[in-house]
Amino acid sequence: MRTPRLLAAVACTAALATACSGATRPAGGAADYTVTPLSPAAKGPLSSLTWSLYAEPYTLDYAQAFDYPPNTVLANVCEQLLRVTPDLRIEPGLAVKWDNPQPDVWVYTLRSGVTFHDGTVMTADDVVASLKRQTDPATGSPWGSAFKNVEAIEKTGPLEVTLRLTRPDVLLNELMAASPGTIESAAFLAKAGKEYGVPGGRINCTGPYALDTWQQGESITLKKHPGYWDEKLTPKTDSVRFTFVEDPAARTNTFLSGTADGGYMVPSTSLAQLRAGSRGKVYFGPNTAAANLAVLDFKGTLGDLRVRKALSMALDRENIVKAAAGGVGVPAKAPTARGAWALTPERTDRYFEELPDPVHDVAAAKDLIDQAGAHGKKVTLVTSTLAPEISVVANAVQAAGRQIGLDVRLKAVAPEAYSSIFVDPNARKGLDLVITNGYDNTPDPLEFYQYLRTGDFGNYGNWSDPVYDAAFDRANAAADPGARSDLTAELQKIAVRELPVIPVYEAPYSVFLGDRITGAPTGIAQLYYPWAATIGAAH
Image 1: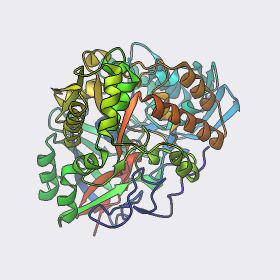
Image 2: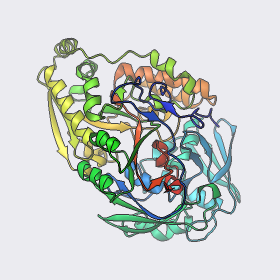
Image 3: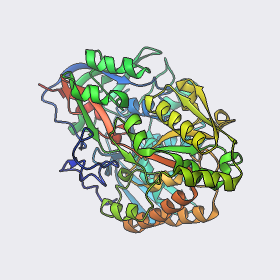
Image 4: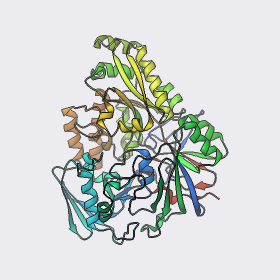
């Protein structure tokens, strides 16, 4: 168990939200905003609602879900052993409790009487099969590295599963509240085979909604699961239909016209318009994400730390926040947002005060480029129409690079190709930089810093630092949240000094709710919390 995040009973204002939103700004001016984990509670049931996604999910296979669109849908259909709540705490999910009797052993006691959507009862065999599937190379799961220290996954009772490790791994347990801990029917997995989770295929989980239809290129529809186990999350809406609108302006129009009742990750270019409109309301919620530039090739121009530092110093982060985040955000001091530090929120201010402020100094950056002999060298940055902020940041990085003598070239790719960069190493060939929205799935910032460890799946550029790796292992063996948080702060200092990723800005999470609905969680916990179950009529 972890120290609860102090958000459950109070909303955090922009002036006070240091550890709440991950994006603070003093009150006053057009960028005023309030961060709260929940929208007002629903007042009644609904027969249906339409939810807008910025892209169609590339899969509904829990073992392949590694991005916002698939996880936004699956959060309502599939469940994990543990659960992340809207106020970023971890609580029991399909496991009623978990124990750590030895540093290298985790034991999960399962909830009895839970049924899959086909009516069969969940057992320890289903849990073992679901977790083992993540570790099978044939699955090709991007979550496989989360199980790197797992030696055995065993059924140790009708409703008990034990994980035996080669070394202590606290983070593995926390990730049982995210995709790695998702449970599916073993019999269904065996029957579905390669058709599992694909368009036209089926899934059979335990969540409050079941997959009804997936009409590829058009929509995904979920229907209420009448046998759902958690009475406090009994769905208030019978049917949820997801539509996919990639163009930000067109997506905004679906909100303004009422074609869509709501959607997460509101286009930043439309925040002001939607906040001023009368068709609904934009809410801001807790966020663990920060916008970063991830280095994809340490053998190229950016392999020289002086070049990475120079590019960072050339960035005008204040103007990037205005253009890319609609003014709702702040320059980032570290690769993790302040909101990612929910493990011990009372320590967040101290950790960030110990970091240097990001500096905008073009002259000093030019000097570093000269020292590195990098004047005129090429840097290829991938960009896409996937989200408007990607193009805005890409243009800003190109301009900053050229100011200091780097030849920053933009390579535009289709949205699906952009997403592939994060799951397919071959898609990164010939690229130096990618704009990421790096986020934690759990309330522990150590999760993000895991992705910079040598050999981790999320270490896109294959950066390697033995001092960093040793520091990570110490943090991951620390059962006490305070000790682990302090050790993670040391990892953060190394990352800021060595810049395997270049921090850009952080902003709160956003959701638009049309005037006929309310009740949605507002923050990034929606990636795993069954958010649609709490949405109902606003009047």
